[in-house]
Image (cartoon, rainbow, N blue to C red; front, side, top):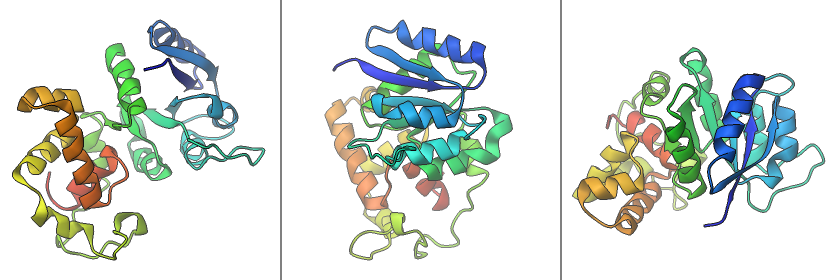
Length: 235
């Protein structure tokens, strides 16, 4: 794996510098920029693989910046062939904003006071395409998600509907025992490697099952998968 290019977007200078120094010290990561507002993050995002994003920032907040980065937008109207992944850093005081960041397309959420090793691990996982949701963030998200009245309710969201028009909530009846087991562990915030060790299987096997879960539920990422499980009363 090559060096992961990381952009840090955080309006508090001391925190921004601390994150940048921590990330730059990792042999597999390189900070390509450290900015204090969302507009600058959007401007520089095309050079990054992962953007570490604060939510509350001047000029443009982290939610709108995430939306523009994920959609490949920039002030000049250019588009990105492959949009960077966005890791949102949040606090308990920003609970109501987490869903907005999720809807904007964030690939992961981590509390700002997390252990530095958790931040580095989250960056690597997101870069691998896993998606990350801090177990401590999950309750914050779930408080803003109402369980469905029925597991077979038609989804109102086009992103949650399969191409053949079927309701992905029906897919829960099609989960294999192993898929259900892995879904439970994903909802606990475990990575593919951690799940593999827990179940004593190969990481590639876990990846295959996670991919099947994403397909069956119509989820874009592991984060969306956790939300799907919550909406369907499976947590």
